[in-house]
Image 1 (cartoon, helix red, strand yellow):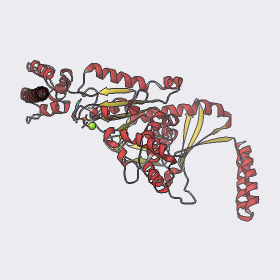
Image 2 (cartoon, rainbow, N blue to C red):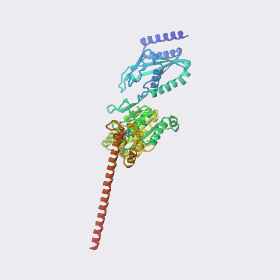
Image 3 (cartoon, rainbow, N blue to C red):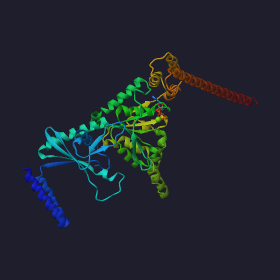
Image 4 (cartoon, protein in one colour):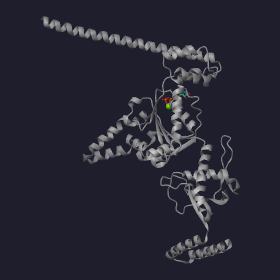
Length: 484
Ligand SMILES: Nc1ncnc2c1ncn2[C@@H]1O[C@H](COP(=O)(O)OP(=O)(O)OP(=O)(O)O)[C@@H](O)[C@H]1O
Ligand SMILES: [Mg+2]
């Protein structure tokens, strides 16, 4: 039976080769269409292709990555030609199928063949992406009698397995936007901060961790209520209270990549949109110091005023306005993105804004629904100090803790300053000396606070006296006038 198919297809291939050589193109196209129909009539096999970059935005297909990982773990070792990926950080060698290689897989007793393909484009058009990368694809080939099993069960199995492998083997990455060509560049993300090492009141910490876990498990919930699967956090507080450390702890906790978006390097809203669409799911997009990144407070107002003035028909003014508008990222561009566009690209993204001045932000940016959770990162409390003492000195208790606890009630110190004091010259080994350092620093801070309070009180008293003196003089002058 197979031999018959084979010779029929062989015959058709021969005919096609002859046509290509001797036929005019119109007739050839027509005949080729029939040729493919003929082949598919005789050929009992079905093929499905999965391209690496299938979409308009040149976003790498998650299905392709999942298949690559599935094949690497399950079948690639059986291939004859393999690519060995560079090995870093003592990780095992990664072997992937070489291009134009094939492997077979088995599922419920059915044989499936996978081909790793790569086509080289005939015409070279300009692209930011390596050309060959755009054209890699896997082809899955199976007998048509197994169509139901493959399309309804096997592909799902491969994608689910592949995605699980991706998240198991995931090495976190830190992406930053390159101001030169506005592309994401990445390095391995290796921040050691975890929720365990984060100095914060345990209740608050638990609340945040629960919130994050609920978010990651919320795929069905978000779909049910018709909202994009995203969550916004606003971290605010003075410098050195652990906002950036918290982001690293979140990434390590969730096993998410971090996209550190430098807004000042983004040319306009279109570029912002592209950069954000290129982020992968399971990621945290961070915009640090949002109040400094852009004049977000003013720009929206300015934009509104400009729109209002659009009737003005001075062409020069109009042009300047248009340039101004198109050359910057605006608050509305950012808000539009946060609000809507993500729903179209798969979700599971967290966006974190940080600021030292929450009072300076435009209310539109922080209203609920946009930033779902506001987290205040504040001065160190005794509970947070205990975490730092455990991290830096390996101690849970010490007789000096009582004094320290009292001093935390009397003055403010950031966790960064506490940590600095715990890092003594003796390399953190002499706990008593380190705690002594901290007590001295806390007492000095308390003294400074008291001195500032004393000066403030003195200033207030002086102002009061001055006010009394001015009023009394005014009264005396009025009385003198009346007397005259
Ligand atoms: N809550 C904290 N827990 C543990 N370490 C902390 C904490 N806060 C600060 N630190 C320590 O202080 C350093 C500075 O903290 P971090 O950069 O997270 O502060 P920040 O709030 O982001 O400051 P900025 O507003 O200046 O960006 C960190 O490297 C870390 O060692
Ligand atoms: Mg920071």
